[in-house]
Amino acid sequence: MHGLTNQRVMIFFFIIIISLFSSILKYAAGGVCRSTARLDGKVVLITGANSGIGKETALDLAFRGARVILACRDVEKGEEAATEIRTRVGGAKVEVRELDLADTCSIRAFAQRFLREVDHLHILINNAGIMMCPYMKTADGFEMHIGVNHLGHFLLTYLLIGLLKRSAPSRIVVVSSLAHNFGWIRFHDLHSQGSYHSGLAYCQSKLANVLFTRELARRLHGSNVTVNSVHPGTVRSELLRHSTVMSLLFAFFSVFLKTPKEGAQTSAYCAVTEELQSVSGKHFSDCAPAFVAPQGRNEETARKLWDVSCELLGIEWD
Ligand SMILES: NC(=O)c1ccc[n+]([C@@H]2O[C@H](COP(=O)([O-])OP(=O)(O)OC[C@H]3O[C@@H](n4cnc5c(N)ncnc54)[C@H](OP(=O)(O)O)[C@@H]3O)[C@@H](O)[C@H]2O)c1
Image 1 (spheres, rainbow, N blue to C red):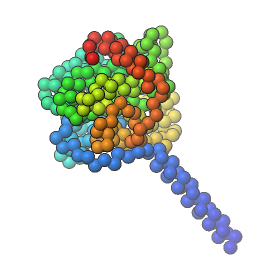
Image 2 (image 1 turned 30 degrees about the horizontal axis):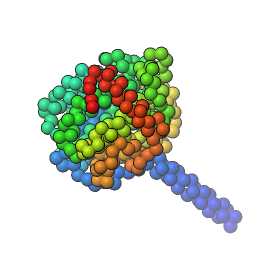
Image 3 (image 1 turned 90 degrees about the vertical axis):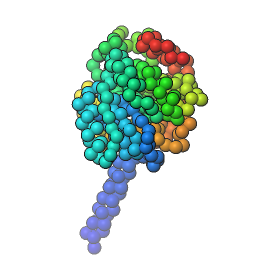
């Protein structure tokens, strides 16, 4: 009798532990994009779509019928991703084009060809990113994080904004991060020449993504082109390739991290959800509005960053 009670208590605790564990996993998985919107006839461009969150976002949007263009710096890796998407989505319309966001010549060449060959752009997803790399510079001498994550996408968006306007209603999704909370824009040393910390350089670039989104939304008011930023969650991907410590930490806690498919949900949500048709300048996470740090809401900083970015890139964007 006593043995039977012990057995029941153990089964009870076992069930409690299993359900607690599955609740934690469900929580870690985050929000799900429930929109069933179709994208037949629509054109989507995603940067850094050969791996991680970008590849899963491309798969989701290809599944909805869009023509999806994967902009990748490594065309071979891009073709592998495109083949995988075609295998998983019968009849998927996926193309690969070369784009290196660490080189303004590559960005300009990409945009020139894109504008010549593609006559609409309904969704632009600025997804590509680099995190915690050793001190490196882009071809134009920009620090790598601010150069790729912010300035590269700034220039790309500038070059494609006319097409986005002509294709309206259209949307821009900027993949930022929770890391923007820990960043500030170091106008006195934007390229970290005085001192460099790879984590802070990443945070600065992700804050720049949020500020760019807000300022662009303000400037696009009334154009029927919206722009929102996203925190995808903490996702198992190749992003940490430059940091052994962070890679080990992520590997240890990997069971609590999102899969790339789960990480792609908020990007897909911002790209397709009907309720967001006229929502612009906002920040989302887990398919819901998310907190923006005070430094990400500062209009003066956003305008100053805009002007500094234009100056660095040698462009005029009113
Ligand atoms: N994973 C997370 O937990 C997490 C959290 C918050 C935000 N994010 C953001 O999510 C986005 C996607 O990251 P991920 O996690 O999916 O990482 P990922 O698997 O490393 O994907 C990053 C993509 O960006 C591309 N890329 C890097 N430098 C580039 C350049 N110079 N030109 C063109 N493409 C370039 C990479 O291409 P290669 O394969 O050729 O390097 C890759 O396709 C990033 O913006 C990241 O900051 C991720």
